[in-house]
Length: 501
Image 1 (cartoon, one colour):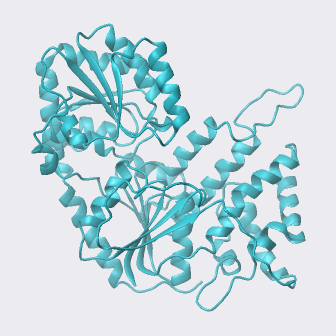
Image 2 (cartoon, helix red, strand yellow):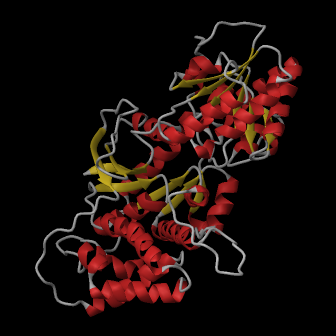
């Protein structure tokens, strides 16, 4: 049996980023434990390429496609009235953004021990009783929307849910999910199936990030307003998708044994989204300070005539690269010798990357901004004067902490833990001074002005970089984070098992 199995969605080991680096750090830092990874992917046809060298103590890797649904041939089954009676409240609750009746529904949706699920995916999708539940839910919640569009939205949302209840997951002493959503559901299912605990660590708030993505999505049909009515809100079907993730988030919070979060602000928001406060504990991120602070190589030769600004991150909408590009237009008018580098993968959202390139060209910044693709960020932190982060959602960004190790000040949007890692959290921490500036989300001019201020005052820039170096050394050491999770893992490995559902 494995010691710990990570449930991952859009992260390690196939997608680089702060969360992926954090998972890799935990696994590599605990060679005495055996790990497994369950990775959720939209389709088995998706091409997956490893972005990390997998440590030897990863003993199993399972890839679970979400949306590839195959109905297996089956003999005619007897109508299960009692099963449907217990499953229906759960299904209807999900459509409303609630989490009710999961324990009762579980025994009919998922196997456990020698017991097979009462209802098959085919029955849940295609049976007369499924149709009855669906039409009742439609009349109760969305009676003025197109039923045809409601039906297909429901199918696309619920079939992965039913499939995950059946998915094979390696047995482990502890399951660890790093988001709520689909992987949180899978952790809850595995925990109930094998009667073992599971814990949740949230970096960014999954529900909030999905809400942002869904509100901007162009693949979800937006129903037209009724004649004479004002078009208010996101529309029925975006609301349905948001409700799905609200429900899965609440389910994860209810079922998990413990919730670990990165900072006080996250804790407050998790409680708002339905997490019991007594389950939550704060464990800040940590970085290998020595590894980043002692790295002396430079990606670029030192040149006093240049002022170099970098954004370290994936080129995806949640990082709001477009606002950063707009801010560079203001910087370029005020900074002599400006060079700007966007340091991170570009292939995750190729359409967004193409739009960013077009914006760079349209603003006449092709000679100023360079997209580097994936790089060894250690040599780049030593080559930059200021690091910028324009994300619209974050947890506790590792890239800012890594930059602090090299004495690199940061300008970051007021999301996640950015304010407290730049200005300090406790009185003692705040006494170290500001390690940069915090700006409003989506405000290109304010971002530019913060960078320009540091350009014009080199001594202040150096002072802020030193404050960041001291802050990360005192409060955000990787060894501190590893010790916390090592204690957690060993504690749960020795704990008793859950009661069978």
